[in-house]
Length: 189
Image 1 (cartoon, rainbow, N blue to C red):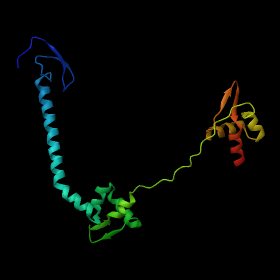
Image 2 (tube, rainbow, N blue to C red):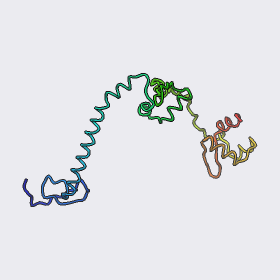
Image 3 (spheres, rainbow, N blue to C red):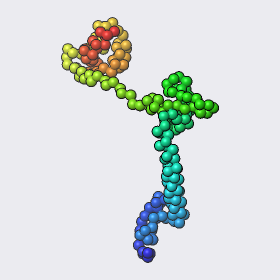
Image 4 (cartoon, rainbow, N blue to C red):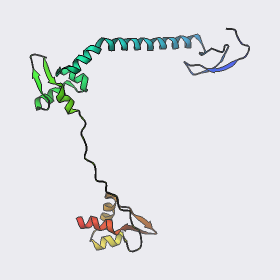
């Protein structure tokens, strides 16, 4: 690789500072940045190798634990993400089956824990289509009309409208509210 008389503008991959490269393949602004990047790459490779060896080492144990009917409390905490106290509390309450075989030899039924974390079907909400508010003349009340008709304070009426999320329309100094929605609320009370 030869040197070029051209100055190639680059950005260092390690420190993100701009520099002028002397070769086409230059990636770093200095040898220190190059060394830092090399160390980081080697560390990532080492971590990946360690993770793979751990996985290979415990692969058979994981398969064996997943096939057993009863597992230890420690294995239950790892598999299901519970604390030891929670597992013991579930055993005490009778939520899961636990067998005490001696000091520190408590075993729990794996199927009980799996059932505990199985998906629960939620009932479907009724697909009620909300009525569109009708703000035509004769189909609306003003706040003062509502308070006089139903003998309620105007502030109470305003709070009731906000709490029930009733749509309103302001025209000038008057606030109009659909009659059908207000009648539903006051008929229920």
